[in-house]
Image (cartoon, rainbow, N blue to C red; front, side, top):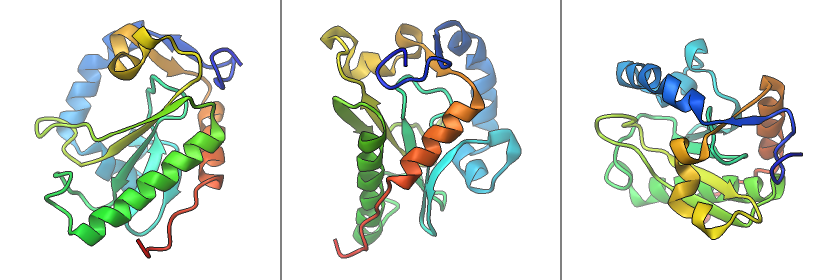
Length: 180
């Protein structure tokens, strides 16, 4: 392993994010990528770690942190709270919690970041990023800097490494039974 928990065959690149930015913007504006993942559109393939009738969780395609998972409702919803009843919101947060625990059990994790990022202009489908900060990252490289493509770069490697990671995370998922 190179970085904490990252297989040696996975590398970090700061150049690929810069090159892929325009392509990413075109694709993200042409179709909701989360809806495409839910529908299993081959052009939007992501490694799925968890799925039930209500939610889906899949690996970030270009993660900055090894083990980052995106959790989203399967139905297209755009507002973090406004598009959910309190029961639906708490159910989804139960999935976020379960994925956070599964990620913590799967990869080395000093701190788990959970955030809902997106924009009405891009990535409208509401989703949560569950991102494990590995042990030993110096303070100046933590928090928001850990998410910066240009400062941190993205992780790239063999598809098999990401498939294995998604499977391992999925095996560790225990979703609450709904009695919240």
